[in-house]
Amino acid sequence: MSRLQQAFEKNFTDGLEVGAGLSVFSRDGEVISICGGFCDAARAVPWHDETMVLIWSATKGVSAACTLHAMQEAGADLQTRVADFWPEFSQSGKGLLTLGHVLSHSAGLCTLDDDSANILHRDSVVRAIEKQAPLLTVEAGPAYGPRVFGFILDEILRRLSGGEALADYWRRVFAEPLGIDLWIGLPANQNDRVATILPPRAGKPAAGGELFARAFIDPGSLTRRAFSNLRGIPWVSAMNAPEIRAVSLPSMGGIASAQALAKFYAILASGGTWAGRTYFKKKTMEWMSTRLAQGFDPVLQCELSFSAGFMMDPLDGGGQKIRSLFGPSASAFGHPGAGGSLGFADPEQRIGFAYVMNQMESGVLPDERCTALVRALYATD
Image 1: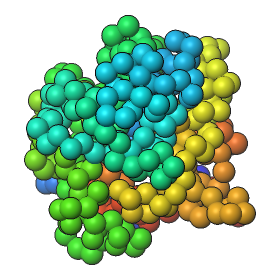
Image 2: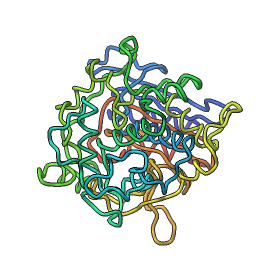
Image 3: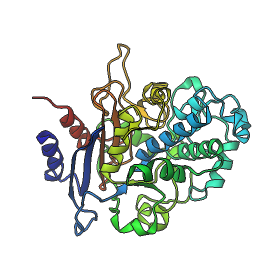
């Protein structure tokens, strides 16, 4: 693993990191964990193995896994219509949308027209989702929902599980039994373990992110609307406030250590079985690793591919990867987070990978800081 250590250290040598953690788990446990740098902009508090940090949209993979687990327990599948158990969802032409459509970001619900919905008030967002008409057809392909997606999953899980919130479901079913140090809604007594998230430095957009950067500054673009439609969190640094960390935000509010995220994905990479207990059935695991939608995403402004709740590397017409964010395996799946964090499962190698950091980058997907680590993980002499 010397290549991985060297690649990790190079990010600090090149001045790209403030603090970061990287971890790889297999079904036998921790393979390697590395950390370095500092938890704060002043570089006064060292980063330790147990340091946690905001992982932004990498939370979506955890939320999707909870939703899929609730689906399998309730006997629902990807063809089940959402309105069958959430009748209010059928408003404005959404009656035929299925769980598969929603989970693969193909339901046309990437943003909301109701600009009064507040991200810190769940009910206001859920009511707006119920009234919202799809902005795109299912046939249009994926349109990523950076903020709305988590609220949809949370309500689906509540309806399927008899009212249990997604954050509570995560703690009860996975986090506490498995000892996974990841929270969706952080208790006050954990705040001193969390690194401060730092906004992206000024400069040119990362390579490949030019289209996204232009769309993001266009007030009328779907990109800008999707990333700014829910009021309540005015700027990135607001996410460091303890009262914001305490809110359950299943799309973007997860706080975790690198080991926690890697262990979670190692469970998925191991067929959903861990320490002799099966958490996911074979069919559910197939939903995670089967591409349901692919195309040019009008929100993230790049080619994307989604399984049921997870991102996968898109394939070309010959079945070859056109991007290797998740390593060489065609069946690998996971989710990045804004600013550069990443977690994924590789079912072929049966490993889970996680990289978390506090200095955000400006790209739409993790850039060379993270992808160099993934390449080093799979490098052979």
